[in-house]
Image: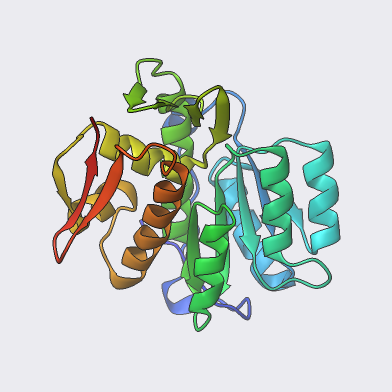
Length: 259
């Protein structure tokens, strides 16, 4: 099934436009309580089309047209996933993400960024976003990303066996926490997914394309840059144990060295 491609100015490619609505069988298989998504977009046309299609797909949407409304929504509601435009009047998407992370390190955050602003994507990942889409974006791709994050959160949080001892650290994947000498650090979903991928394969050389396909679903250039950002972040988190190394294997990939 195809859905329309949405453009940064809110216009649709009507020659290929098909709105996807879940069948009764698909709705029966989904959550009894629809997942609650925060969607922050100031473009009225784009916001309406995206919100309408997400609702048709079975999600409950809180749509905010500016940063102030989003901050208020975050303070008074809980969300299963957040979709944030970067460029907003008043309070931008980065600030909203920071406020979300102050309250909750678990909720996945997807940024929507202008195609030319690669620095936005890198900055967003550094402050705790889990993924991004560039405008113009495919609604089908957005829905797939949402489904992956929600499915992973639901399934993995039920898997209590995913607790790892990594040198002086204890990594509790279901609770997205990394503990060291009595202190605990909350991880984002993407950080935890990547660390678990390494923790399940200690002391093995893991190829970059395999990591990207397993965690991001693809292995293009920009996702490779995202991987590098997350690798740097994990190295920082693990730096208090000198026996743990997240090695770069030149032109191949990475290896998590543990005692």
